[in-house]
Image (cartoon, rainbow, N blue to C red; front, side):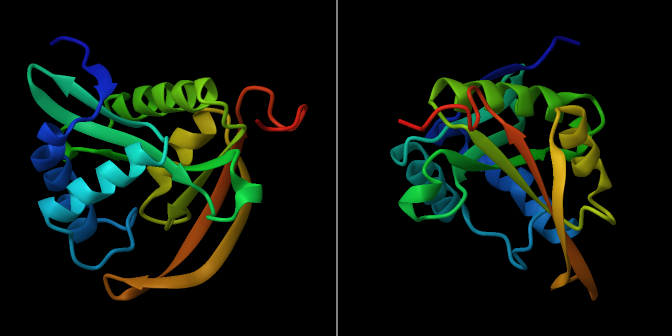
Length: 177
């Protein structure tokens, strides 16, 4: 087995991205969407991310997209311009292989190169079923900054939301561009 390559996402990746996300929406608690968006909506989201100046990456092996990661605005107001929120989704067959960590490392490097200073992980159900996402971020150097308890309801139960943060590049030692 070869090591998956990580590259920028393209519109041609949307069917695979949508399939991975559909599984996450229907079976997991990482996303709090209740119905999976169609491919047209996923394409719109990809284009909005790229147009906004944020990275969107895929991990691919032998022509098959196994996972994806992207960053976007943490909040829309200008004072937040140096802070991004990350998202990572891995196909069920590739989970537990270290691919999520490779995607996160590549995403952090890309965001650092673009001048972003802080990355926030908003982990749905980080104290429950999404404990793997919490561990992934801890391994990458993120620290817990808060838990909002019972703020989401999905799959018949209340969910906590965990916030984790990692400094990128110069962090808060110099003003952002």
